[in-house]
Image (cartoon, rainbow, N blue to C red; front, side, top):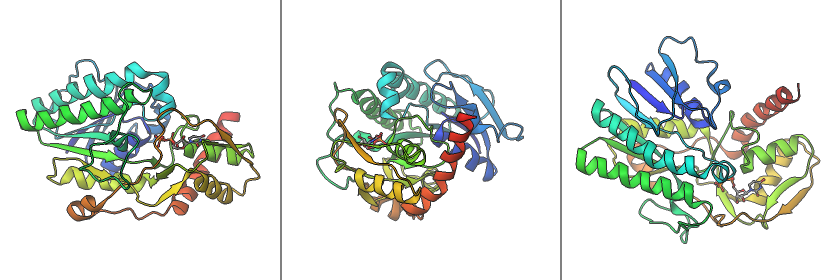
Length: 314
Ligand code: UDP
């Protein structure tokens, strides 16, 4: 396949580019480097089937030649990022989804939308299955991301129904692994870098809120299975191993042999109290489930952050 991956220089995007090349596909990686980085894809330059283009997907996109799949993964994804750049976040989810869908339609390509567990907002049911409509505050600070992704799902579904574009919608739950930005503000990069430096670990609220963390390789495998399937409605991909943020802080402290103290900071506005994917649909239709436990995944991730911190201080 010849595949366009928007946001290809980001955390997930770069892992996807690498995986698709390993499967023998040709990859066009598009990124405007707002939250992505060339460092993430430096190992891919020079590969015959890899092309990078610096472009903002909210503008008209022209790609010459055929395309078999368009994977729309461009978007800030950390709450700290989308609070800093709310309007580009809304635009990439809305205008960017429209442009990439138009491109997929023109090229008769499969379109995949990177959606999110944030479409469930602060959920009133736990775990969340795909038929749950969610509990999102449209005018709160997180609304810029949540509503852009909800709009993106609506637009993707309309292109499926009206234009017969073959679509896939993956609802991605919290994912971690190498190449997350050390300062992206999310729990895993914050806790790991704080723990490595023996600095206080900042738990927001009481730390009783839960998340379920999926290792990036598991996620990428799930995404590929979904792409190759014929499933056109949303599918949750995530690891249902749910834990509280306080437990996560403790686990990271233990694995890094850190002397850090835990300190408590205010809970951000509209921070979801619980989050856990119901993955029965992915298990049944994609024969997919995660294989990497939290401890294994963190042990693969911590060395990356140690290196990144060394590079930063060098
Ligand atoms: N969090 C925290 N300390 C931090 C960063 C995040 O306690 O230094 C909490 C945050 O309030 C949320 C959870 O960790 O409850 C996960 O936050 P993250 O930003 O990783 O992603 P989210 O799931 O909220 O999109």
